[in-house]
Length: 356
Picture 1 (cartoon, rainbow, N blue to C red):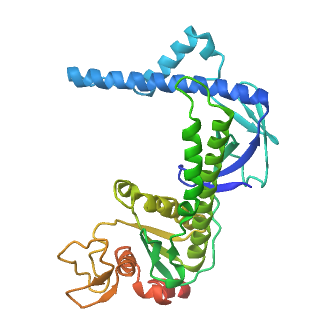
Picture 2 (cartoon, rainbow, N blue to C red):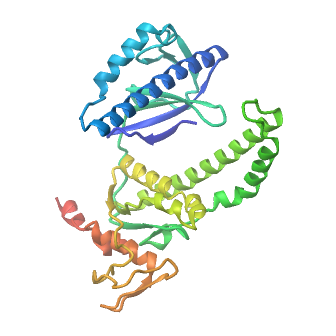
Picture 3 (cartoon, rainbow, N blue to C red):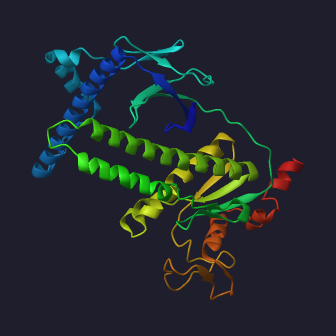
């Protein structure tokens, strides 16, 4: 099946398809990747040398695209192996994918591309499967207005706590369920690990493939859970205030494994992509002090709240509510949305827009 995601380019989307790659094409692609890897390493080494030179001498020499382009031209002139490859990879589509250097691969067209692609990226995953990811202009698919808004707070006990109980996302725990199997494969690989410089045995390669398959299954389960939840949230709400949470720092905590299994980053990305696809108003809110502010009176707690303290009590207005629910409502307030819209009322301006 084709997978559709938002591309890094503004207003674009990626359509990803499985490829059928012949042994000849596989050999040619591997050779092209070797050349690209060599060029990349040379550019990194040159940039690092310039940086060290500037640090030692106080100069401000640069190693920009123009300098690197000249280096590539010179390297291709004196290196036959590098010259055999293409300096610019170009593509065209006519049922099959034609790459520079005469490489032709078969695309499994599980669905049609909406428009002509502007670029394509060919890659191989950990299981050895090949894919082509096409970039096309994004097409907005509007959904009916609902008159509701939603605030989203990210967490570990629950991946997403919202201002609507019906739209909370519990921690699915896909990684925890697969952990016994992954541990077994890790032990199999450890027992059969080859000596340094020697190829792995057939048993080692099989264990490595089983481990990769298990990790791939968990990743797909997380992605499926995130996309289904995001679709429900976007379908039921016109505007969504999302905590702009960066979960990277959780990797240094005692809850790192559970935080990774919650897949907060992937779920947040799925929600933003789904909202943009359907023309919803997605507003990112800075996470600072969202657990300490009161959603009712905007007062800030005088003391830091440890993670074990799950109930928020405002000393100014006396409001008592679950900590994450209060944070979700703070998202709405900071995003400039009417918190009443989370209870079914129309957000600000909805009546005026209908009257117009």
